[in-house]
Image: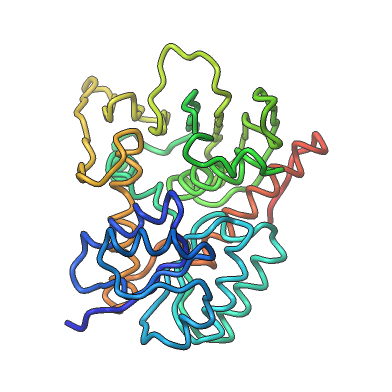
Length: 341
């Protein structure tokens, strides 16, 4: 099996965990790191034994023999990097949100389509082990047809300590966390027919909204409420970064509760067990379940690049999630629901 060679663009907070996750997989090797601040790239390269460092992405792409590029930069540079990689005829993996607007996202999709290169979006949230197992439960039909669901990701965790750039985003919780949870809703219940959203800002030291509530009609039958928040207020229970899920079906219910408990209730009673994520020694304990999911997401892309499987979160698919994000902002501004054909 040929070892696939890739370059990592970015050397910030998430890049080190992205790189560590790749090193868990056989048949893939990072051969170069780009970062506009060269010393950050050099430090990361030394830590992970990456042989080449660049502070010019064009020079990297011209100098290295690559099979794909993993772009792990901030949102305001992400889209331009995707176009640059595609122009060199290379498959590209992008972090989320895939673009700062729908227009830019459409342009990137067009560029990758015309260059005939695979375009993947690193949407790892749905790859969390307990959330994957809930998907299996829903598909089994044991709780019947879901008619109502609630997905909650609300935390007082000081997220701005590790990612201070988030403070300056004009649009925050929906682009940062909403992309994850709206994708999860699509993963479970299908496409949205309607959406209504309200947003709020609690933390006065940031520019964007840190609280959002979104209600959707999905799959033609399921009413889904999504609760998002990083208000940094006092909470009795803070399960960061777990997403709590409660689904009601016509034959029973299923839920993900704190500490990775999966509970399924039907006429036979309630059956519960823990779905504990894999722990990796390089993972930050505060983000353990999220960092674990990076490995599974990367494996899906690796298998797709080898034509062994289909990638789940392609650019084309993730664009549908981004449409919901910006529809939520439009709804919050107008006070009106959005409707989709």
